[in-house]
Image (tube, rainbow, N blue to C red; front, side, top):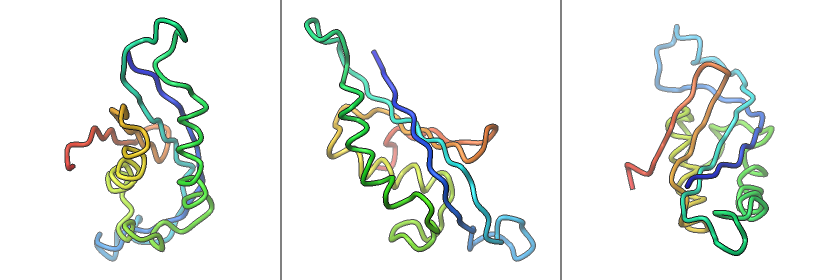
Length: 120
């Protein structure tokens, strides 16, 4: 079974490696939506896969680093594409949440990325 916890944060960024005429080369912002997915067996006593409160507690330090910040200024996010952001989040959450199986990052309602640890 998989569960997920959804989070949002607001950040600015620009993409430094696209052409000078590309609109994303200019500073702009998004309200990001992040979903952290956790896979596991249903605990027969508790009736859950994981405590949503535990997932939230693991996310909180990342939110403090990301929310209302310029992503390019954060070490490891100098090229803050949605793909790179998903990998960055995975690498920080997975050690504390071993059952993490997927990270979804949406930068708007119609565009996003799903990362499942492929580059680890």
